[in-house]
Length: 236
Ligand code: SF4
Image (tube, rainbow, N blue to C red):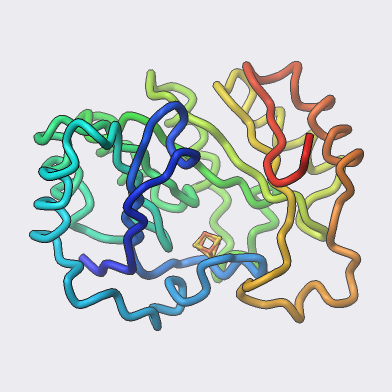
């Protein structure tokens, strides 16, 4: 298990819960707008104290204060011991939210089938057959489609999230994504933030940012297909 860091308290990362966030290192994607470049490149050195044993002791001490645990990354499903870690966290009584890029549907299914996760937040970067080459190193749209299907068919609370940035997102692409996730609990449209990202040069010439009114237009298109569609990152 490669730990990347911890945020001890959060009021916004697990809906309606006070949570802590455990960041795991390593990712198989290279989203140019990624805000965790050190986790992706595995160059971030976690604090010396951050071991599995320390983390479980931390959770023990925070019982009664924390309502849930977010396991994020990087891409947490890349780590083979993730089911075991979730099992230990669940045994302490904590609900778990996983943040994922959806590239490991087999692991997601395992976590769901074994009741090791309570909330899944999956990023959808663009239409699945356009992840390669700028997001993913391989063209494997079937993995993304499979993860979407597994989540929708599960009884697990979930959300799908899309960072709205050119060229990955257009109005037409939002329409296509919305059809893919029809019936979802929640669709979150995220405003692009250009500070501290993995590859700022990628966006230099593209006029990447969407305005608040353009994001609201996307929400209008998506809302009829999902239970809740929200915008994150603008004063809405
Ligand atoms: S945004 Fe997520 S999926 Fe993309 S590179 Fe960063 S950690 Fe990986």
